Image (cartoon, rainbow, N blue to C red; front, side, top):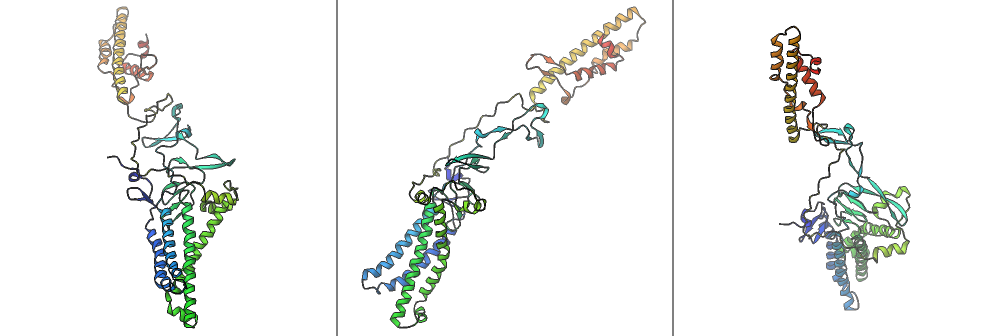
Length: 433
């Protein structure tokens, strides 16, 4: 049965509801974030807002404080959900490196049979797959260098970076937020900022009404602030909690307001701050805010619920005349080469028999004109056919000429034959004659 994309996803993300929701690998931290939001609001509604409903002249105004706290909290939780449960802008991985960027480098060594062999061994150059690690693209008329990602096998678009936690390349990568358990990128940055700023407003709301309730208790009991704090310790705890939280979410809101106004990301600000680089993305404060909040969000590039398409097997590269031969790389002889050598051995034996017959005729012709020769020499020469040198498989050099269409015997093999024949007391000079 065909699998879906989320089932074979190579990143570190976690999916629920059949791939409809995507989270980061640290999604459990969301439970802590939910607790830090919901618990103070529940305490506020029970111990502060419920008592404040009778402190206003209008009965509805008292209940409005409770309703606003609940509704605003739900709004913050929805923004948190939209930030952490959606695709932040993940760029799909490539199954293969970009072929249009290939180039050949003959100086690179290759690994064959467990040993390094130069690509241009024997004068034959084997193309080695290489492509540039960086390349330049034009952004607003200014060249920007982009890098190649080995994990995703693609050139990262401008402002894209690979998140080491999620193991994905994220478009307009800002940072990975552990509090939401997700990367912050192009598709969820708007919701992230709204979540942080709304959490800041919620802290201010709870802090202000808790302080108001302390003030009302002081007026009702005509006492000091200490007596009022004893009457409502929950208000004191909420004020302290919201004050501390404001330093975090409030400071984060202010920092991202600065980033939006200058059209930067957190990653760019921390990495290139000391380089004094020109910000090619800055289009003015107003246009930068419009770009973040008023432009249409791009749809996800990934269809996590789609079925995985079987990848067609790529055809092997065509062999070239410059490829390194197997014998140069120390490979084993192939079956075709063995067949060629067997045929070459037969031809070698035929050639040896012909040489012996010529020697025999030469000896006999000399015997009729000169002193008789010892018959052992003839027998030794004739018997050399049975003592023909054994050709080892690793020393065979006969091969069929691909272009000439004829058999060729390597000179060193013929040389070995002459030496062997010489053992029968026949010199190489006689063979030539």
